Image 1 (cartoon, rainbow, N blue to C red):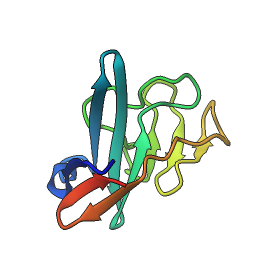
Image 2 (image 1 turned 90 degrees about the vertical axis):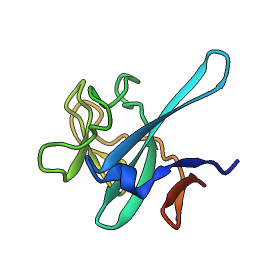
Image 3 (image 1 turned 180 degrees about the vertical axis):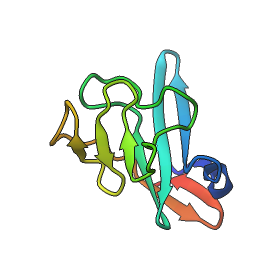
Image 4 (image 1 turned 45 degrees about the vertical axis):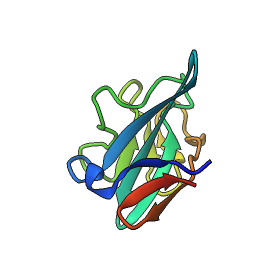
Amino acid sequence: MTRELCQLADLEATGAKEIVFIDEPGARTSVFVVKHGGTVRGYVNSCPHARLPLNFRDDQFFDVTKQYILCANHAAYFDIQTGQCVRGPCKGKSLQDFPVTVSGQAILQA
């Protein structure tokens, strides 16, 4: 299923955007898209350490240097391009990829 997640402009303020799907009663899925160095990536918003959302605040997914995705709950650092945990309690594990594509100004679920 191809669906529009957000617009590229939605990433300007923080570099990331959370999207929540409610596909059927009780089925909630949170994903996020990030833009870094001209590349847009998508991940499921769940830390592989404790299955908690990565962000404490809306659309805040980066560390202070904006070089890593940060789990605000456990201070795990993830490589933006691969989703691999490079530091923290889940080192060696990875975020679950959520394939996206860009069409014009729209970011779509691939």
